[in-house]
Image (cartoon, rainbow over all chains, first blue to last red; front, side, top):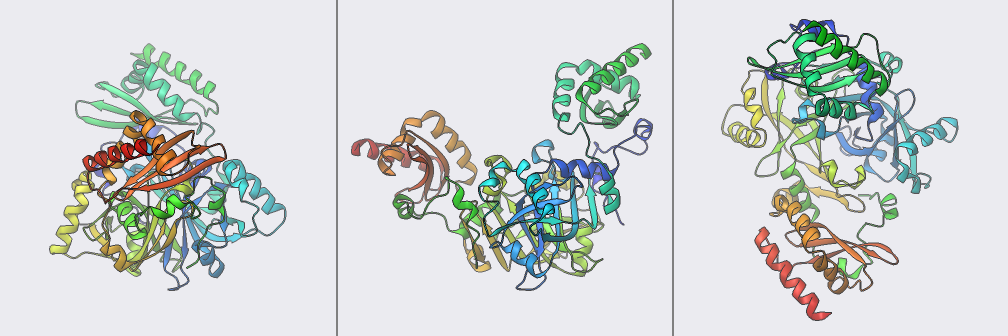
Amino acid sequence: MTQDRRGEHQRPSAPSAADPAAEAARAPTHAERTRTLVHAARSATLCTLTREPAGHPYGSLVAFASDAQGRPLLLLSTLAEHTQNLAVCADASVLVAEPWGLHGSPLAIGRVTILGPCAALPEGAARDEARAAFLAAHPDAAGYADFRDFAFYRLTPTSLRYVGGFGRMSWVTADAYAAAEPDPLARAASGILTHMNGDHADAVLAYARVLAKVPDASAATMTAVDRYGFELAVTTPAGPRATRLAFDAPVDTADAVRKAMVDLVKRARAAS
Amino acid sequence: MTQDRRGEHQRPSAPSAADPAAEAARAPTHAERTRTLVHAARSATLCTLTREPAGHPYGSLVAFASDAQGRPLLLLSTLAEHTQNLAVCADASVLVAEPWGLHGSPLAIGRVTILGPCAALPEGAARDEARAAFLAAHPDAAGYADFRDFAFYRLTPTSLRYVGGFGRMSWVTADAYAAAEPDPLARAASGILTHMNGDHADAVLAYARVLAKVPDASAATMTAVDRYGFELAVTTPAGPRATRLAFDAPVDTADAVRKAMVDLVKRARAAS
């Protein structure tokens, strides 16, 4: 499949394949990034096909949750346009995106389009599981979830288009998506970044200068952290750079991140 | 067209048609609310039809602007999936929504689906106008707007589905939409609400008790303001209520709102 990269290459913050540190550092796969993003999402755009005129693409806002396999779960009113569209044709996609607040540009937001048929779950164990997962994400929906004109819907992914911001995009197969796991640090990441950038700016700059091999870095900010490592936005005399550093082994708790960060800063200071 | 109201009626904050004050107060039409919402939007979900398989609905994130007639303007890369979809079939919709941060529930957000054909603008005056409007909204895009593989697209509305949050939804015709004007207070509204709720809570409570005829109100918050009036969330012993009050005549500047608010508080105090 084609990639849309021209605009992204205008952005100084895109990790560059010519950057040896970035090449060396293991990063989450697009399937993993997609699972992480979907796991956190609480709202989405549902795309269905209109009835009149037939087959026109129709976007609508929905409350969103996902099950243990990452399949989208929706709670829809039978009276709503999108639900009546699905009754005629189950073909659908959902677009889920990171929160707007994380980025300056809307196009820097990580997002995924999940394509597949979307159908109501009949009474039974699958419906009960979907109900439990949906209400865990949306407790307020308990007030109307069991009304006669509401039903739980599940979208079965057939393919996924991941766009992780500038310069990161690909098709993800349904099998790769189902096999991937959401990042265990997703919930903790924001707090880790705030802590590191706020209280350990000197350590972050040492990572950039020594470990990422940008000796003329004048400032550095940690912009992302996941089980495999973290990303830095680095200020240099030649302009901004982005780079990525890996942990020695995957970490899955905030405590393990703290220990890994301390080890790395010791290594940076020993080498400088 | 049908309405999806069951879930909304579970929400105490929905303005009720049984509320005499709400009935009496002129409110923006759905066409006006839609124009206002579109005018402010800077990102959207574009819905197109996939090529392979043919005709599957596909949602993607786009940077968004609109022209003086409220028509959606997009700047798309010819390499992107959605652009290749449009090259085969121009049928599209865009979903634009209010910012997430304004509301607790994603389904309380005002949003609109604009349906119609979406086509690249050839070189000429229309393209130049679209370019100017788009770059005014997205100055950063000037860096790649004129690359050979980017083009400006315009969606021509054929119909619009407005959902203004709980209990407010309808189809809006393209003619009504084109004839409506964005609210002149849209940009000032947030500052007006902060000022009134922060510095004039006593006046807001007087509006609720006297003018909105909720004498047992124990607290009131101004939740929206537009050229025709404003909305209040009122706390009463019987639970929360929502109501709307009208200005005597439409206002179109923050200064005119201030004067109208002062007049109303004098009236409330004279009547109490």
